[in-house]
Every structure is written in structure tokens, then in C-alpha cells.
Amino acid sequence: MDFHGIVISRNDYKERDMLVKILTDKFGIKTFFVRGARKKGFKLASAILPFSHGTYFGNVNDHGLSFINGTRELEQYQQIYSDIELNAYASYILGLVGAAFGNDEPLPGVWFDNIATAINLIDQRFDAAIVANIIEIQLLEQFGVKPFLESCVICGNSSGPFDFSETYGGLLCQQHWYLDLHRLHLDQRTIYYLRLFSVIDLKQLHSIKVKDVTKQHLRHTIDTLYNDQVGVYVKAKKFIDQMGSWDQILKK
Ligand SMILES: [Zn+2]
Image 1 (tube, rainbow, N blue to C red):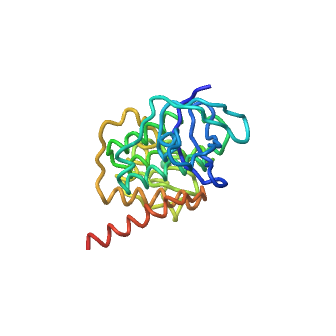
Image 2 (image 1 turned 90 degrees about the horizontal axis):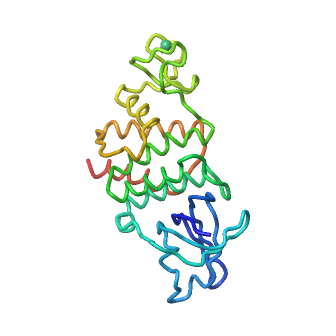
Image 3 (image 1 turned 45 degrees about the vertical axis):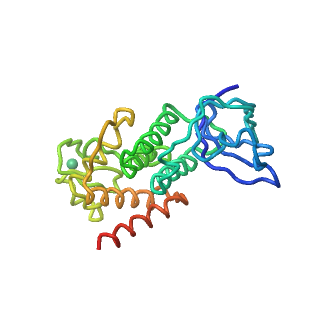
């Protein structure tokens, strides 16, 4: 059977083989046993590089290991492949997806397309931090955290100013700020993007330009939500955080 796939990661297995994790459109995340993958001149070598994507065919099992027999229309993300920063963001998104969905279960709804679109946008040099923010916000629901961003959670007021309350799990309008002393004290621009990112369709994203200071606030806010409420930490995130601190050094 054939399926679309994006290679997430791979690990050496025994002396000559590899276990390759692929995000598939039909079966979710599957692990493939690739015999002889570490031999020189292996014929499917390019099919199992990180971020390779295209149509694969093989034997896909419900549980345990699956097998690749061949590919067609296989492509690499050239920019992601050669740019360490883009690579970090793409790895981070795929890592989050792995944490959100688990193995061997088809992804719900349009999630495969969403993720493929996100990786594609990063490869086209859309702002990778913003693309990652959109995926992070939209994945919150999969992690069982669905912040209410439509209006004030208390009174339904849909015109701001707003702030975000973790205690109430959503927006509070100014009249209700007094209810939560520990609200996040966000500026309205950050609120605006949080609300936009929760509903935006990545396929409709043609350009987006966010000020650096707002990007830092978004990063900080989303980190707070993930640390406090999701509790998932993806390895690639560490590198993204380091890049953030290097930027600070370079600016000084
Ligand atoms: Zn209110």
C-alpha cells in the first residue's frame, strides 16, 4: 500500500539496519525496519534521510514494525537541510507532533496536511518561529489544554483589552482582571497574535511580519503554557532556546 510520508527521525539498529520513524498521512507515526540501510550504495538511502518526503510504498502493520519497498516523487527540503536554524524549528515541530499524537494512530482531521504545510512554509523561509508558534498553539488541544481565546471567559465580552489567565483557562476582559492576580499581564499585540494563531489556517498564510519584541513575548507566553500545563519537552527545543540567548549576545 502507498502513503505520503515525512521522515521524522532514524536510529541505527544492529550492524547494518535502521529503524526509521515516518509521519504518514494514513497511519499516523509509524516505525519502519529498513534492512541494510547502513550499507554503502543502499538503494533507498535518500528515502530515509531526515525530512525526506514523498510517496512511499510498503507493508504497513497496525502495530510493531513496518517495511518500505520503494518510493516515488521523493523530495528533500533543501533549505531546512542546509540551514541549522530552520532545521531546529522543523525538528521541533516534528518532535511536538510525536509527543502529541503517539505512534500507530492515524492523525485526526487535517493534522497531517497542517504539519506538511508548516514544514513546507519553513522551507520557503517563512518566519520559522511564527510557524512553530502557530503549531504550538493549535496543538494545545491535542495535549488536553484548550485555552478559550474567543472572548472573556467570565462575561463573553469580545472586545478588549484582554489578558490571559491560566487559572481560568482563557481570556479575561479588563472588568474581570481583578479575579486573577497571577494573570499573565500580556500586551494587546501578544493577545492579538495568540487569538489569530489559534484560528489561522496555515494554508492561508501568505505573509506574516511580527515585531521582534512581540515574537519574544509570544515565545515566553507559549513557553509558560507548555511548562505549566502541557509538561512536554522536546529535545530540539533546547537548541531553539540557545539560539534565542545567542541572539541576545549578538545584539549587545
Ligand atoms: Zn469579562
